[in-house]
Image (cartoon, rainbow, N blue to C red; front, side):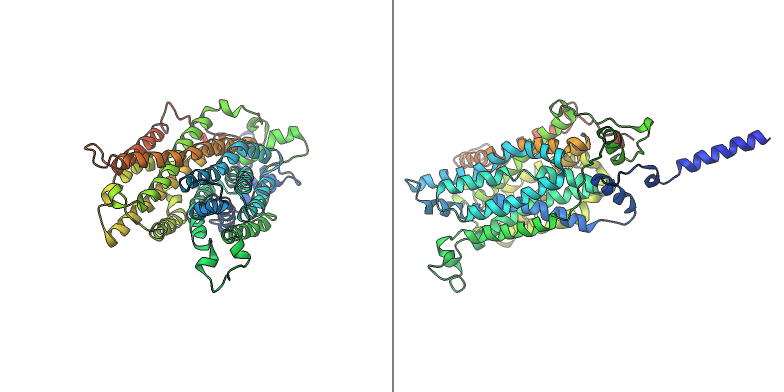
Length: 499
């Protein structure tokens, strides 16, 4: 009888031990920044959505996106003023070089910034990247020659690879239930930046001509007519850089490398680092990690589709009706993009978390890619409307396209961060950024060439005019969709997702 009571007492003790709060069972290192973040995440359980962290991620990602596209509205005139083109027809070619050299620089350095983020921390990589926007974007606005513009844009792109570290940071700073929301915030801010950037460039370039009462002739603003939009972008980045000084580091840095090996990944995965739960920190060859590489390849295909779509949509909208275009003004296009941006913000804050919980990261990506195909093929039919009906129809279609694209990209972000351990996330995101930059470097030229070809066959009996260009876009989308299924897509998961 006493033996039975003793055994029962021991069992109860074991049960109580098993119920002991995870925070008390984990081993945290006092001087490790990653441990401090993990401890804070445990203490914040049940406190709701961390809006402050979301705001920080939003601002950092926006500062990276704004310089990419803000030059497009005034680039043609900027190159013309350099007097480097022998003929007017050559201006577009030189402008293309200035636009492409940014992506070339980012393609060459994104992987390096990922390695830096893994070795020295996410925070230094982010801080250096944001600061580079302040310096090189300002110098670009002060460019007085074609080669100065080329060099400053190349350096700006070379230091703009910090989106990868930002994505890794977002995957680590949030609790698991808010991780998808954090990554969607990064991707949504990126998309909004690509919409706001051209608006700044269009409204603020050549201020002496547009706002003579504020900016007098023969003033500094007349000598540097393209400096104002770059100054605004750089000023925003400066504010973000100051704010980044106080963001916490998420990379684990223990005094003993052996102890770091034993506990860093275990803490993030929710274990206590005991012998039977220990995770070994291995420097895996990421290029042989097929679950990672398959999602990166799919991400590159979808990126090619998105940048080609953006190029085609803008050109199609402003093209004359005789070529199948809508004869829009730049303000008309800006109004539609503004509506799309507002819809994207609402979706990202209010709806995406529920979508991700309902269908998962990969499931939401598959569904969004599938829905994109009929949506795109409806664009030529929407173009048959006129007046207010055309504006409403195109605004709805553009908003849906932006929402579906963000859902696809965010799902792939989540997948890429789940299939690698923390100490290699920066490098993994660097690989993704490198591939994406390469595909986005060729996307605009490809999209423009396809649109030109389609406009030459406006009277064809099979998919005439823009019907063909959106059909080609759908082929690319369909290839990306097929890549989201086995056997191509690998779905290896980290230990905390294997349950």
